[in-house]
Length: 202
Image (cartoon, rainbow, N blue to C red; front, side, top):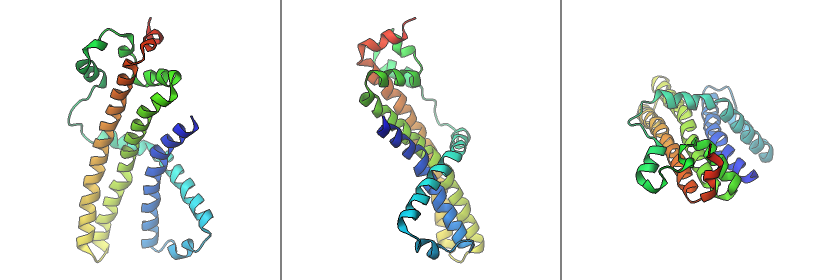
C-alpha cells in the first residue's frame, strides 16, 4: 500500500512539480534574482531534500492548472471505457460490475487483491502525470517567446517555443488516452473476478 501511494504521488505531483522548479529556476537565474552557482555550492543532501519537497508542493498546488488544461484543449473524439469494454467483450453484458463507476470498481478490486488493482492505478497515475506536466511546458513556451524578444538567440527561442507549445498539447491528449486505458483496464481486470458482481448487486 505504501509503495502504491508513493508511486501515485510521485507521478501525479512530484514529477510535474519538478518541471515547475526547473522553469522557475531558469527564470530566476536569467533575471539575476538568484545565484545558481552559489546554490550548487550548498550541501548536496540539503539541496536534494529542498528540491524534492518544493517539487511535491508545487505539483500539488498547481494540480488545478492540469485540470484546467484538460478542459481547455479540445477533444478530438469522445471515449467511453464502459461502452468500449462491452463492445469488445459481449460476454460481460448484464453483469452488475459493468454498471459500476470505474473508480468505485477499482476500489473494490483493490479490496479483493491490492496487487491486481495496482496496475490500473499506475496507468491512471501516468495519465495524470502527463496532463499535469502540460502547464509548465506551456509556460516554457511563453518563456521562450519572451527570450525571443529580449534574448540574442532567435533560432533557439523559436525552436523551443514551437516544441514546448506542441508538447503541452500532446501531453494533455496522451494523458486523456492513458486515463481512458486505466478505466478500460479496470473493467478488464474485474471481468476475471467472479465474486466482484456480488459487491454491486442491488
